[in-house]
Image (tube, rainbow, N blue to C red; front, side, top):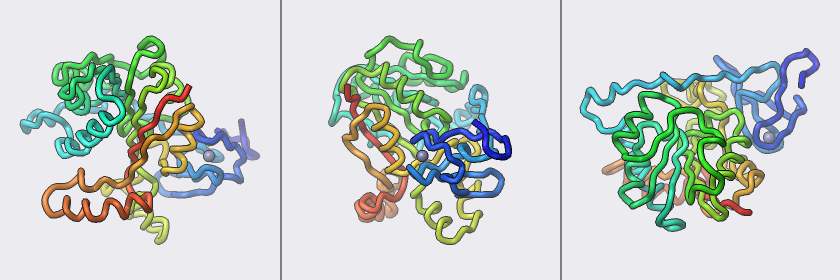
Length: 284
Ligand SMILES: [Zn+2]
């Protein structure tokens, strides 16, 4: 599809909207982001004249964290990942779990302690071999695809900080649906376009609020979800929402900030502000 300037114009990756006038520029600096007026999904692409920036993940990561004696790349993520494992067991306490984009295997390591039969897929060669050794899970190195596992094979499939990197999320979730048994559980954790720094940017239009190194707008993030656009996507792909929480700051911090998090999390959650954790069920 091309626009009036004969430039490439892809439809919205979530709702399929393709009219250029239905997208407005959301961020315009070192990369350009567009917001779909129909579903609210913000992405590097669609939008008239803009191409997706594809990142090669295979050798992007190093194991430098081992030099400092760390067990995993982001040790502070442990409480957040443990929270996800604990929430999963409310819906499914046993069985086979697949973590797509499993990185260093931290999440699978915690899942195996709960007795799950663990599998992972990871593009990075270094991380996938580390994950295999460290978590004891069965890890396949490569880009996640349908031929990797049989149909209805898993009880649980997770995409933790992964979906925002994928330019074709519908294809990815259709593959998840294929590998997941009927009524199986899918978990998605993504950064939110309703994060506090993004909200501050929306009101002030000051680019520095969301530019690296402070984070926010990141080259390798193809899309920026809101609770609404994530629900549109998952519903479209045949999943029924069981739970959606935002914020979860009490798991990100310790000490005094944890207490602040415990007090403020219900407020942020009711306002749908902060990173999104979605748990849904494969509806057949
Ligand atoms: Zn859309």
